[in-house]
Amino acid sequence: MKGSVLIADDEPLARRTLREHLRTLGWVGPIHEAHDGKTAIAVANNQRPDLLFLDIVMPGATGLEVLEQLDYEPKVIFTTAYDQYAVTAFELGALDYILKPFGRERLERVLHRAQAALNVAAAPLLSRARESLNQIRDLSRIFVRDGNRIVPIPLASLERVQGADDYVMICTATKEYLVSIRLSDLEVHLGRAKFLRIHRSHLINLEYVTSIESYDAARLEVVMKSGTRIVASRTGSKRLRDLAL
Image 1 (cartoon, rainbow, N blue to C red):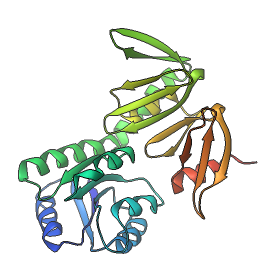
Image 2 (image 1 turned 180 degrees about the vertical axis):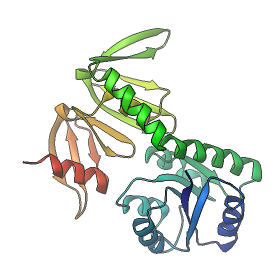
Image 3 (image 1 turned 90 degrees about the horizontal axis):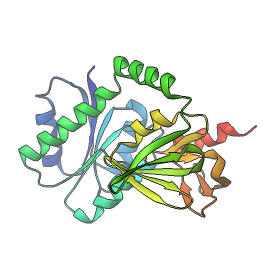
């Protein structure tokens, strides 16, 4: 399966560097480009590319604002000359984050990771994921490492999970556990009976939701029993609205 790509950057040289390298890769399909944030939003929602390279500082809309305006959830790699945005990028569930100017070796590592991430979405692997889900849908707890111990966490006690890069923070009412696993992989293990993905970086237990409020014209904000407030993405907000009778 070939993946389509969008390069959104206001610097022509940066776009050309990425474009020329991507064209040498057999797994890359159509390559779209945008020179500002507003164009990036329009192209992404219209063409729905699998992978986005988003410059964070762009005219029209920042890369972070572009991500919030998408009506689907592609894989995203942020590119920027400013390293202060790294934490925010990973909190939003970015696949990776590269500083400009980026060297060939760093770019190749990022692209290798992107290829692996896109392959996860291929049909044969999706079939295997569904098979795994069928095998474990009756599990009532998961096991995680806590220092030198392995402890069971009842799914009923799990309030929410926040993902960042290759790690997740599993949050219960009494403790938080940092676990080396991607949020999408953990989502398969949890199933979807009580857990809902409301953001690329957030999975919530519906049993712990106290209220759902309007955040803006398109998005909702979820209030958890712990007091944590989470703004759902547009896609996540649609999923929440679909729950209403």
